[in-house]
Image 1 (cartoon, one colour):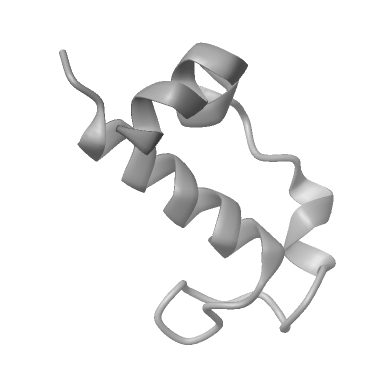
Image 2 (cartoon, rainbow, N blue to C red; image 1 turned 60 degrees about the horizontal axis):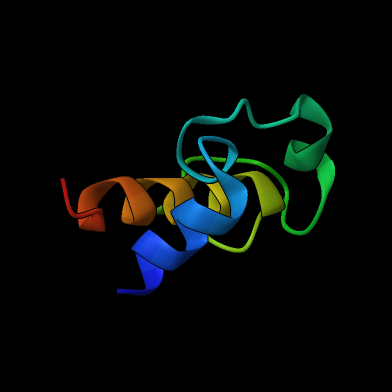
Length: 57
């Protein structure tokens, strides 16, 4: 699976890493992910959530 490959390449940074605060200022004005889905912070958050939910344990 893609999520397992990403985890092997990047380790816990891909699923559990701290998202830098400055990413909230990139793209759309920051708001919740359903209001501003293309804000960089929200894109990273959704990616982390997707990787965590699709890892084989």
